[in-house]
Length: 452
Image (cartoon, rainbow, N blue to C red; front, side, top):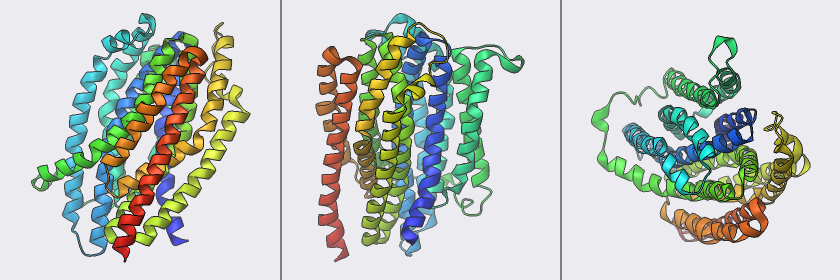
């Protein structure tokens, strides 16, 4: 029972934190829907593009949490030292700046790529306007993920909860005021929506630094000093684990991003419906993703401490928890798809009558793969806790791009957006199956042998 409470204590702040991040994109999409279907399509496409780079960057940085948790497990059993945690954090700081530079340049110059992929010029123009503002949120957003890795890795995630809740509450009024010109502000339209998200991202980064370093637990690990501890070997170790994790994330979100491009060829209404369904499923996905990150840290800590029975119990508890959440989210998508879609369609647009049935159909397909999506992301976290990088990435690549996306491409001509989503669901199911096989093999060949 103690293990269950501990896992719950770690998971809840992570789930709320992930929901807060997803709510920003969700709120942005709701606001863009008020500006019209064309803005919803273009801004939604841009939000997907930005989310791709953010999630890939998160994948690299969660390796820091795994290294910190592993070091903490060794410290608790007198096999490690606190400088290992500080060294892992400093490596993460370097990674944040490298990723911001690389991804920022790509995002700023993404317009030719979107045009080359067949997107309509009017839609791409809206996407460009949105991204040229939102790109400035990249540095604070990634830095927040790094600090979150620190507090999660040392087992003190409570600081994440109030920051996430306050940020989620502020995002809508700030973005709405900037979009519409409330309180004497200029009416910036889609750029105002992006600017509001930037402001909230900066606030989250500043808040987590101030709230963390007020606690004595974190004072031995300042990111602004102690750089004599920085090690290129540690940086290489972080990248060695983080890059495969990022690639695995990229394979999944890349499949959804490619799906947006594929659906964009079907029409603006289909693309807008895709953005609606994607935002709803993203919100639902944040719950198992939060569990995955907490489970990854606990597995890493127990694995570092040699407590292999606790590893297996943690995996079972997490899979039971995400089963319940997947059933709930799937039920919502099936029972109330119209009200969910209407959240994004507050403006009176003639195209709405064509968009609504497409979005409802996509949400039904999404409900069918909620369970396998939850399983595959949790199992990915478990394997990360074992500090395995390559094999989960290969599993993701094969599942999403060798199986899932080709099926989406094959079905899109006859079944449109629904066919694309069906192919993605099949890819997620294959990923869950392969990752479950990898975990069972590892638990038999490594954990059982080590325990004996």
